[in-house]
Image (cartoon, rainbow, N blue to C red; front, side, top):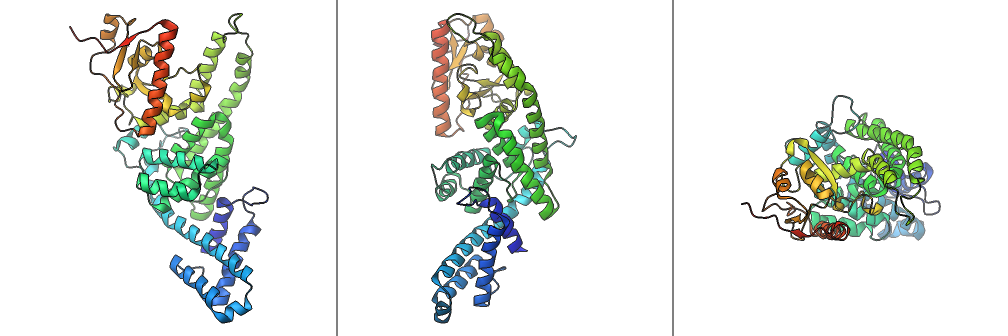
Length: 428
């Protein structure tokens, strides 16, 4: 029944102003009681009413002279709040119908062999259009993540975020509301009830793990467990794609716990020199752990989506021989390790040259050669005139962030090893 669904929705959607915790069943039930009071006073079917009908019932309550004499103004105000919440619920429920269908479609690109997470091949197929997936594009998911994060941090209101997603990303308000709410719940470790495609769920999970590392995994598991339990109880369908994401997170959490002692030991190693420079062996150990951990996996998936599973330079899949390359080196800035704007998806040869500073990229995206790069090496690795980053599809904020990180890459290698950069030499 709608009122029962409304009560459950309130418990996942709103928090108590006094405790900061999700609304209790009793507090959510109070909203339902107010709506039933409206139904009793007006003699109308509030539970099955449309949004416009709800407005007309509320207007009747506040303008009918007989009712106004019998009902305190405080009651009218309380009922009005409940009506607003119920209208929000109805709007999300309407948008959610689309997502229920999408859940089944996106599950078709998830692995059927019991593996723990969506395979890279399936992910590439979903973002390149060879397999149907969610109706939203990766850039819309990215925008939803950015706006939702600002809402969670209190820098923007929900209304501002919805308006921006509608105007800038062409989303409808109901879908924008669902995405913002579900991201908030994932971010805060709260259960949610609005269905969302497995692709969107994976994108949001990756974005949160990218930003906050393995420490965010327990909250994400709690949030997804809440959704799966609700989906089973409500529809008898937990969404296989979401269950696989949850299972993968469990495995990653167990692995992270197992590595924690090794991380502590590596961090405790003494510096390499009296000048207190970092211990290089410890740095390599920590990097290897990071590469095998959930934050790097999320970082790589974000790059695969951004570059449609193809090399950022060549524009082809390179038979899967692609590396998630950090622009600013992993050891130099911990805050940039999971930032998708600090990454490029490069073929193995280009990644090796880029990591050593033997190539870089200019602000216009053109490939630059170091004066230390030998001509036969450049030829062997396929470095030739005309190569550039294929980034014209990226939004301006992303381009600006990548350019800033590329400037740091060039500056670091120029100061450290005296690389000087120029466009690739013309072919003989």
